Image (cartoon, rainbow, N blue to C red; front, side, top):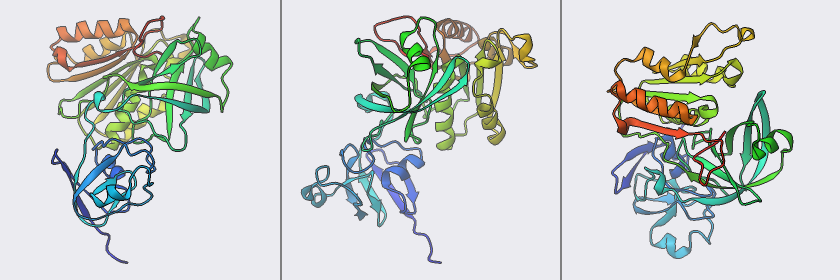
Length: 348
């Protein structure tokens, strides 16, 4: 068997480096190594991932002429979503490090799957057009554009590397027109429109501090995205996931965080119920989920916290965590708001 090639890719101006065997595209190899380059379609049609090959040779793959002209190729440009290395490379390209680096788009999508995971929670899977991808950071959200001009925001529950479908966790809200439609009227193959990505709730990867990830109800959705992104990017900072709900039904994907903790020694999981019912036969922790964090950590000065859930939970966590030493700049929050508002951050 012939030996597998190994190519070193160097990015300018950041100086980031990674190696690849050349079987994956430059974009995919960068993503697999935790480096996020801009992209749009992932199939050589849009040009969003265009960059310059300063040194080395590439196979341009399926790059389409309207996105990468002959003049572009002659001047050293390539589409990193379809180009593969033929040698060590030095590339000039932008890297995505914050939300403002990613353009906001309006896109259509098709309902691929509706999965009822609890009596009041649906996992909604959306498929984008064949030539489109939504680039986003783990933890961000999109807003559905409704026919009456209103918007409804939902956090993206999948990690960016797994972008074949967009996954959203939708809780049925009494009096909520859109969530009622999801539960009572929406069907597979329905067409929706959304705008995004939005939000500053994403992992600050430059930090080395241990993480506390705090979720209330469907606030688990962006926390799920953060954890799965971290696992994929081989981020091994100590990570404690606290998921609070009223009763066992509210922990609607119970095996998933248990599997994270079982398979990764740096991840720990604590479910907490505030109003367990007799039929729950709950033997675990009870009370308010942010209080469980404080029961475990009298000093939060060395931590970074990501919290997502109802505004009351966020406000209490922010105040009480600060009183236990958490620096204000290390508390990142996404407050779900179910009441009508001009620009909801996210809703469940």
